[in-house]
Image 1: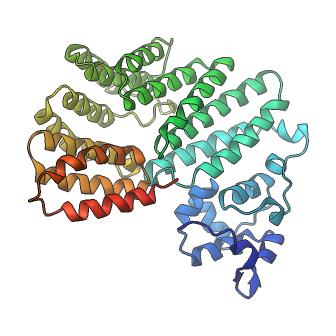
Image 2: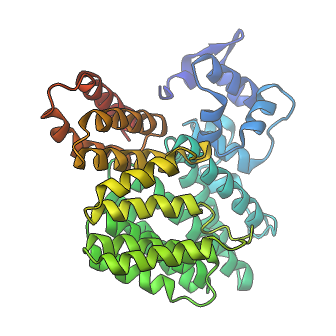
Image 3: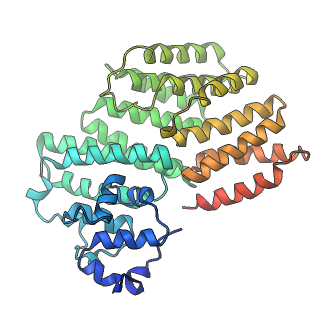
Length: 397
């Protein structure tokens, strides 16, 4: 379900026109109104960039929204015309250079990005484009008037937000949109002097190259990232993971195994909790990548065993990645001639892709469906077709 812009003009709630509630900036009533229209707190949190706890508190009237920044998030995320909330057309409602130079803003943007990133791993990237674009407008406006170290810090924060936006696009219908975003993120990170973030963006560009089947470019980008001095262990492990996948795609088994072994050794050591860039790179993440490498190298039987072990303990806060790994496991089953197991796993992958609006997983599934249809004895075939169509519709951006 999407927001109907006509609601803000014509709908009523609790005996009042919704337009009047907007004029009074009664965000509590607006959130309660949307709850009656089927929007969960989790979805409202993702759409506005607020935490789910804060959405609940505002909806219950325990917290009133007065901040221009939060009003901006609400307006952009819920498709409310800014004038309806008394906001100007310029980004953020922040009107002076002094406001934009607020030293607390960078920390707020860093914390918010952590919230949105964690949320995307659980429920996907749907409905995040609006809030992220809105925040990027604000960050860009702040950077434009900042000077000295404050400007460099805002530049790095903008680079990180743009990298996150590229991830949203990579999981959408048009993954090519992520390429210019990653180029921009790398340029900003380098100009800001944040070499670790610049290396992380190179790693992400390597991941995009792998999605496009370009092993040479993927390996080169991952190597450039890995050579960055004093890269935090998790981020360095991610570089090794991307190299391993690139070597497997190029059918270099020895180099692939060496790279995955390097990643696993790094991740087996005590890790710094402040290593945020590669926070999602765990031992199980690297082992799932190892299974993918084995699968690309034609070792589908050993790949299925590793996938099964890893997915048996996969965390609930990593659903976006789980959809991809399960789609890969289905391919490995199919390569082993286990069509029934492949069909069941594809169905699970599609349900996760539907729940997280992940076109990355659905693209893998779409490549398998013609092979599965050859097995007319599969009882899940009709359900697979219907689920695939439903998932595609849910991922429409």
